[in-house]
Image (cartoon, rainbow, N blue to C red):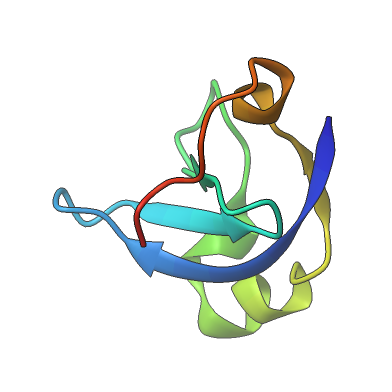
Length: 68
């Protein structure tokens, strides 16, 4: 199920995590060559992706909301 990004925070390992409208969290790492997300490395880039819909596997599995 696709859910929009509504915010971001960093996890305990200093990796960016997208906060989705459904209440789930999803890592949005930039780890070339496997994952190309250079936009996550800047505040302007992250802000430009607010509202972008990501596939939420947690919704697909019916998992409860994540803790903030």
